[in-house]
Amino acid sequence: MESEPSEISRRDRAHELGLSYVRTTVLLNGGAILALLSFLGNASQDALVQFELQSIKLALLCFLVGISSMLVALLVSYSYDAMPTESSYSRFWSENIVRVNSFLGALSLFGFVAGVIWLILGAGVPT
Image 1: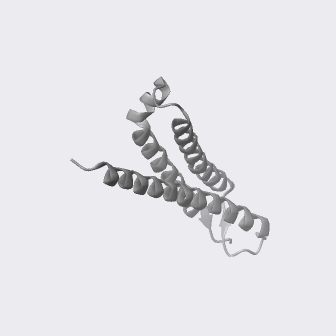
Image 2: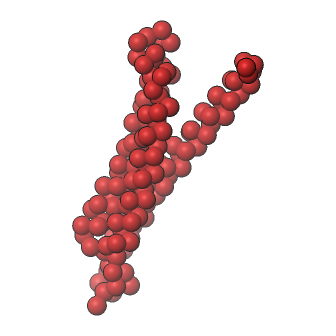
């Protein structure tokens, strides 16, 4: 059985890794939205690449799902930390928070990848 100091250290490392993951996925999805909007703002008729409007809409939706899922994960984590340990809410999340946040993290990463795929599939060379 592990001693309590190493368990706290393990928990601290897991916390830091989780925050790093959240920051990274929010940065990826938010950066993708900004890059796409910047490209659209500067696009002209003689651009080397054109995108179908539907693929742009779907990509933006995927990036938004990625950001939203991480914000929900942050909200769940914050409310879990803010609640008293003896509350039923805290007991429920003690058993489920890792599973739910893992799902939301995977959904965020999937949103980014799906958005990029939609953009690739919708790209074309103007004729």
